Length: 508
Image (cartoon, rainbow, N blue to C red; front, top):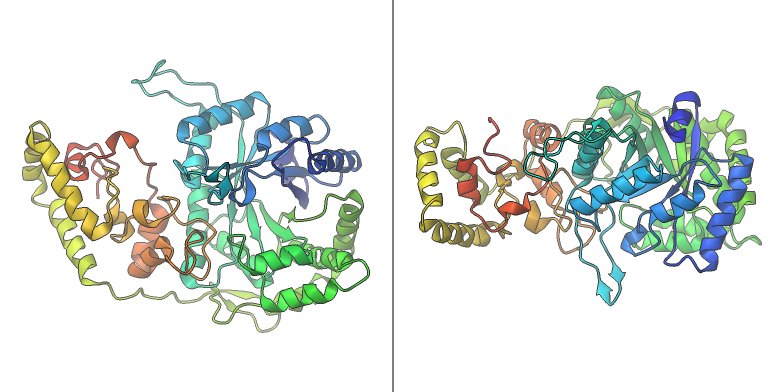
């Protein structure tokens, strides 16, 4: 067991603290991180320190490098491990390096879209999504069995004792975004996540909603830590502008922080008190712990925060009105409890879905006729596809396919078409992160985090096209494998009949 895993199993309530490395090890910020880690470790203030991975999409010191140094002075850190910057081979290499350094507690994330780096914006990779990465880590926990076609094929590698966790953003205000976050969380748990940390937020009802959902879906025992933000005026203004994907600060809360900043201490105590009250509320709601973000690297402030949270806990229901603000028309998965402003364990009805256009119905008809294993044409078309693939017609056939699909779906020639699973919307062309197993947590009011106001999140559009029954089948139960780049610019139609893609061999 990792130290953090042991804390989760032995303690009633755990507290972790997030560190954000900078772009250099030669600055005062780096020295402050090290001094802070040494001080809080000496006092035993936190159960773990976590280290972000290029937070905000900007380059920074690799978390494993800082983690290697911190292991000497404090308990094993939680290493944030994101998908955005590495292909799957580099991911495996980095996981092996973490094993070598005995850094086994991981927080698996999709990651923020890359922002400005050396001489411009970096290329987004996202070769795996967070669900696929969790699946990979889980297989490494059991012992990788190498495919027969690779060097050393057939060999089973020794198990690696990773303890992986995942994140969820319950602070979504529309039905589609809310349900999609929870569906993806269930996929992550199925793929092997052992603990959950939430995005930061200020809605007690949304915090409780997450716990209700996990209990209803049979995951009451999974340890969940609530993300708690210690927010000064500068950070409040940044978040209010929507500069950090997935975090919302209302106009009312911003004005409150502005008033508090006029105090002689610049609002320091007020920020700590707000965070401490929310920590007490989350403990009262039933969270197994909290994950503190945005706090100053000040051991004195850390002690004050924890002391206030302990003092506030017996009175936690008193603070619920302070965390009851929501945008207009907010969707909640459960009905409101009028006595306390929280939730009752009664589900709200979900929308039936929007009307589907002519292209959707035409595409679905074509799929059922020609690309379903249940189709009566399948036994006759398969040998025809084999003959085309073995002839000079294959090149022309592929060009024809992509000429048609480019105009209809903006096809990206992946050779492994998942249009039928995605309500005939292509995630390779319409998702900035190319995600195959649900959305990231960065959308806002239904807009893609990368193109706000210009492009709607493709998964929101998929959700709206599907019926409630189809949503659970395609957005919850189905897990798509990562894209196979060996099929790039080959015919997805032929690959289906030849059994090369991810959908052809699967019985429907």
